[in-house]
Length: 355
Image (cartoon, rainbow, N blue to C red; front, top):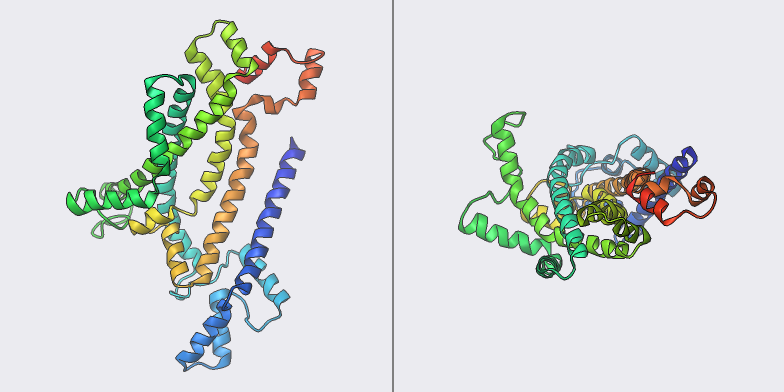
């Protein structure tokens, strides 16, 4: 087990290192080197010597623009290890880490809640559709989730904004909380935060639960004809037990993998939703950095998303045995324990977690 953890940890660190390296050289290969562009902009503004311009560029990017490429690369890696991601070009008085730190809680609040709600709803509906394929429930919800899965989130955001903030004025149209409240652990602030988060969460849930439902349906259908399911049916177990303990549980493994990816990308925020609702999350600032060619802030967001996705996948690799106990028993051990090939009954018990 220790060897497995160390191997997965090594792979995760290698992926992060490769992505950081590619990001470093990618910025320098882009048309109009951002550091050179900033230097040219400062020269046009005037009032600064070449040394002052170089110091300003170093303040923003954390690198000396005239230093050799190898030196810049080592400085870049050292800055990241020390949490120095530079300063935003549009607001040099603060740091990229400070901007990301202020935006991250709002992204986690909205995207995490919407991800949890859509995942639970989608898994439940998808499992029901797979277990009862010919029922009215399955036919109606297959149509609904297919339509909802094809609708882009920004379109739902526009509709919600038009009706619930423009015509009926039920919810606020922007911001994370009311300007007049005092941030802190008090009821006016908490209620204001929840009030402002309703529409962004609703827009994400409406467009994402259908994808989870269809994925769960496909995963559950592939399990229906398995030997342990037929063995459970032969033992006379109820449909509810078979659906929950045999079909549902064994269908969850690929769903957990997708959930891990979604959790990782969650730290990137919901770009369209946060932008349309002007919600100050990571996705909102990422769009702002792209529009203003703020490469420091842009690279800071990329580093955050990359690290989050890799860490999420590493954690889900460690949690796999809790979802499917068969992973904890390699085939060679099961064969040795039974004195030969595992029986259908043994497979059924292991799938249910009874061994």
